[in-house]
Length: 177
Image 1 (tube, helix red, strand yellow):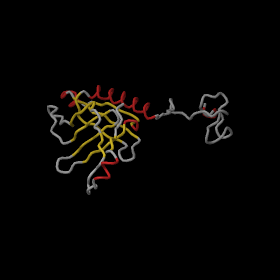
Image 2 (cartoon, rainbow, N blue to C red; image 1 turned 90 degrees about the vertical axis):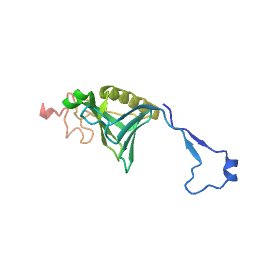
Image 3 (cartoon, one colour; image 1 turned 45 degrees about the vertical axis):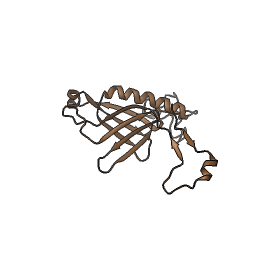
Image 4 (cartoon, rainbow, N blue to C red; image 1 turned 135 degrees about the vertical axis):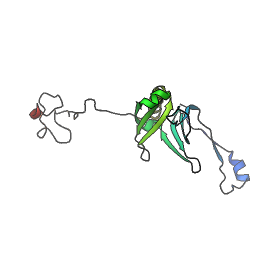
């Protein structure tokens, strides 16, 4: 993954010149864009909106607005789930929508609406998320099946074996079987 690189001026040159208000002495190299699209109107799938989506190797950016612009950023390693959907109107226009669930506090859920090649974009985002997690050392643990995870003694980890009898170690309270 192309990580953001920061290049600082030589210290001697920085001391020679005084820094001015609003001046930045650091340059951040732009990341390569993997995918870009605009939110499209469902009629004829034309991009008549002021919402732009950009995917880089480490971030998903959502830029909104015409007069007042806002840019939201989700780090890819924070994305938990990507869901694809396609309404009848989107099917006719050749677009689809993605719902992204993240652990980002400011943007826990975002909808990429009416985008071209939505299914392919979903797969690309999923692959980039896995790469970003690996490169940032992020590990996730999920419980498959929705039941409580059995503790080493056969009981529920929070309640203890006397509150959650599970003699056959199947993760289900034996009183309910």
